[in-house]
Length: 560
Image (cartoon, rainbow, N blue to C red; front, side, top):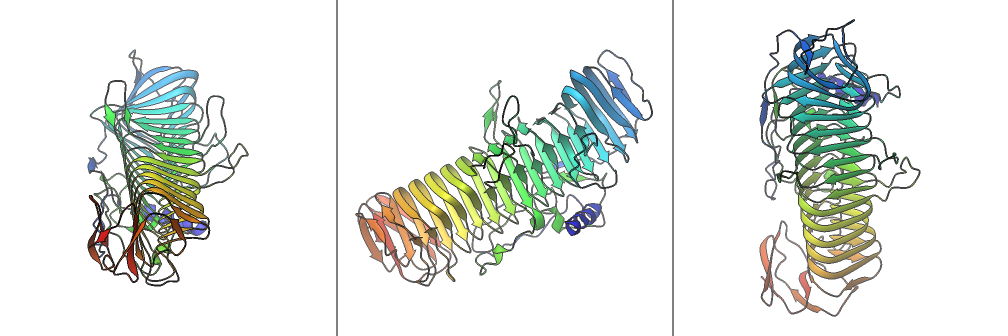
């Protein structure tokens, strides 16, 4: 851990946010690029004297370098403030602090510290750019003393809301960028964060809604919740993403929820529709792979998507099959999206480039004392993953009910205790097994296209228990050896409906009354078609396979 901390410190000292990286275009697969667009954040040129007034025109002055807000209301801040703090202590009251072009720096305490209030709303006013710098000496640890403000913007007691249509840039050399001990809600504004630890942390909940633009470079996790107990009103530990354009470059996990993650499109009360666009790059695929002596904490920050900073889509085209080299991964957790109880993806566009699993659930013990179910449910959205370990891994059940999933590179593409596929379009490339379940695989609909390395002990679809196919279209490939298979189960393997195209050595134990068609076509690299009546299915092989192309369907097939 000490080595990791030192590594992050050195990198953050020199990191240049806005540099670009070369991408691998040598693979046979199509190029896959990130989603986000560039947004330029101006250099900090705030130089005017600092002012803090309330909406009634009263002016506030500092006492011992602290501006104190001790009652509810609306307050307006503007100008440059160095080595001063804004301190809020208004128990059971709501405080709104409007930022109208501020630059606040502090090297001894948190620039903004909310000790107590009901809701603290930080409103970033339209057409203004605002800067918060926490330049304290690094304390990367998770402090148990909640009187120590472990973030540049810290709310010890109360809910935190960040709203508006302006821009907020947060730099934290000390610990977290933005940290609320209760709930954190972000709506509509542009936020750029560089933080030694977590970018955004809400102990109980983080909600992102509307149409914000968020860019994070984090020495640990990008967005995190830490409580998984049951509060007086609701279960803690959720991360909700209902809109926005979000780019995360994190040394650790991109999104890490103590309980659950929910990603979905949304509609507000005025009928505006929002669909989240999320780019996540972790560990060596993130900004930390690029170091420049041109670094400047107050310099230009560009937000977009890509390894090396926020400067345009990182992109990747898949590394092909390299004999299992993609099993290399980070020593510490560096997953794209992680939770314990569940991850639900219902909409949006997600791009993950992770030096670990892409999407992952753990069946760890929650703060309530119970074991998490560790399920992943995907019913919509457009998901693209390149992972050094598993593309999607659930310690519990993985349910794919819709959406488009492309696992462009992985060690094992999809892995879970139970895998249920009923709809959607899923494409998997894996160096090891493409789809693997410890208990059972059930396919009743959708399309599943699996490619694994033609060399080695690699199964296309593999269950340590059973496989049941009752619908859908499945294309699966196996290695050039009968030691493994395109589809294999230790228990029973039954098929009652759907279409199964097996490229390689046909399964020996498949129980089915459907028509079996065997062809010498469909094995070579390149494009092929399978025609069953009026149904034409197209597929492409990256490599040439041994064995045969075997089709199981309700009628005889022609393979070309």
